[in-house]
Length: 302
Length: 296
Image 1 (cartoon, rainbow over the protein chains, first blue to last red):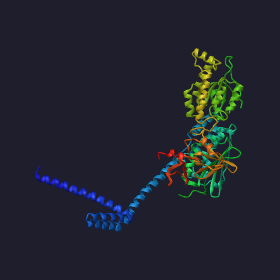
Image 2 (tube, chains in turn blue, cyan):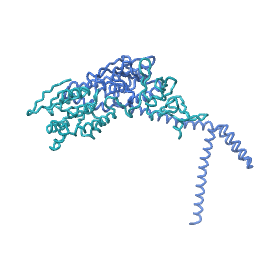
Image 3 (cartoon, chains in turn blue, red):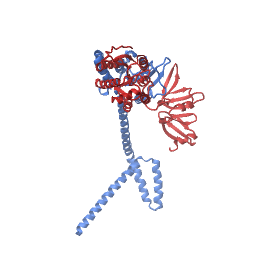
Image 4 (tube, rainbow over the protein chains, first blue to last red):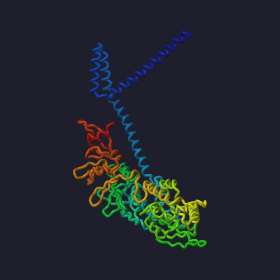
């Protein structure tokens, strides 16, 4: 290897080293800069004291003086701006987390709302199949009710105004009509929902879940069957929506199932502590489930 | 609910008789129509709308075959079968239901999946006819033996076996949340609802909502995220009835919901305190319950 070449490569290596060192120093400098920007003044005074004492002890007070001078200048001139930048960065991070949490909550809501009982769908289709053979006009009626039910029950098909009490009552009527085709005289239905409440916002599928529960746990186990009553009324600033049955009541040792827990979780997500689901056994027997939430006359325009 | 079918007896033999039990009228209508199509001679002598009626009518009419829906009010189809199987061939009908299907796969009992298809019903009826021809009393063990010796499709098994199978089914389906008890998912037997008197009605508070129970002198305080109730049940009674995995005793006077515990902290005096999710309450852990949170 010729000498010139060796010199050139050494020179290259030297240049590389200087460049790397410069980059490292730069990094360190900016780190120092960031630290200065956010450090408390009191802590800075302390470092000045220690550094000052240290450099005086090793007999180079100038270095200590330079440290104090430079850090003071940087802190005064650039600190505020840099601090604001850092804070903004952190705020952006937090905002992203908040957005994420919100979209997670929304996804959870969607999952919670998408609960159409597959058994119900299957049984209803089976019912229509039988009725086609034994009672075609009835088959046509049940079929129409099923279409109504699915239109409001499946989120993909849900109309824009699906989240109103009127829509939910309509859906429940369709569901109850199907159940009446199956249970005949064992199921009677009463609605006590004033028309003016039809436009009030009310979350989808909750009323449905309460009615399913009333039938499944209250009336189906009872030989004579009974009545499901759906009521809605306003007390002060709250809308109350109530589903009562005169069935076998609640077994205190049977779990409350997925449905009610799901309603509680959704109410909590939507209204926090302003809403609640309460279950009661009226003196006359049976069971009543009541959803209470803030009453608004109509959905706010988006 | 009586329906006398005019069975056209073939070659002098008494026409076979059947009972149909289902709480849904359309299901009964369909099964009757299907049976008339695949087995015209079969006389449907009674129709029942619930388990109690099924047993009554079964004992009164003594049908050869009982078609029983599993989920019926009053008595489940399984319970009704336990009363009728010595005198009738039992065929169960069940809507799609994983528990029931699993149970049947293990046994040799006849079952139909609702909605009943014509082909499946024809197969079942052919099997029933073969059995009944082989031995009109094929429900006895002797009959089963005769049928087996004759190389016929024998009935499922001897009555004792059937009884045992039905008993097993009953427990299986009970666990699946069937029968008369409105079943919930999860463990049975523990208290799941707290009853608190509020005005004229009994307020039912799900144990899932309860953060903690704290005993007062005469009452026990039930605390949820949004409200509190007073009940007369003592802490001792609650302790006996609640699921021990759901609630822990952390103090002579406190039961806490395990899920609700957010963190365990020590105060200046070295006492352990529990902080709860969804409530500002802090609960003291007594010294002799400190071991619950030893690793923390």
